[in-house]
Length: 258
Image (cartoon, rainbow, N blue to C red):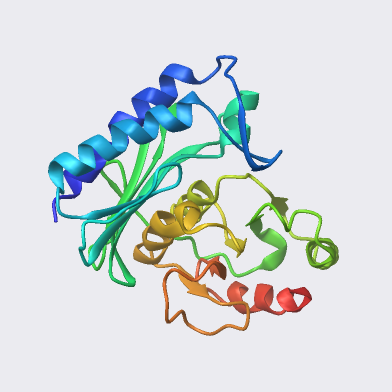
């Protein structure tokens, strides 16, 4: 596996997002008013898929906008050409693109790009996690009152009562900050780089977290389901990710609302 070839695909997609960011783009609604796409999503995806098909012609590609390209392989790329489209449209520079490679049910390589800062997070299974050329790792914060915790979910959960109860419990614990950034891949990478302490994922699509989850694990982080069980299937979309300290179990205790 040559991670440089996956990075090449991410860089091509990033150039498209750089080109369109800040422009007034026509918006196409998909499943709901919150679920949309633009020329930036489609253009980034086209470039990414082109590079992947050139360098990995026999691998499946499952991309958010184009769907599943079946090559009959045990290897599958999961591609989100623009994670955080709503932020992108509003001119908020909190968006990314992500490419995660799975061998059957296991993630083996990942790249997440943050185009505005020219940041490329990447990892290969068993070889650590990196931001550009620098190795990254989670922080060691154990105190929940000093923790910044991010949350994201699918489009049907934003007004869920469980979320309201969770926010109330976090306020009672007087945590440092609760964030809803609307870019799961980027939240997982910030956690991997020691900038967050925990991230709660409640039902997002696999494109949103497939790449970031491997980067977080390779940076020394922990991922469990909401009951604290280790993941059997890395495609699981309801999970708590953290820096792996005692803080993880403290947050688990607050997730009983779900």
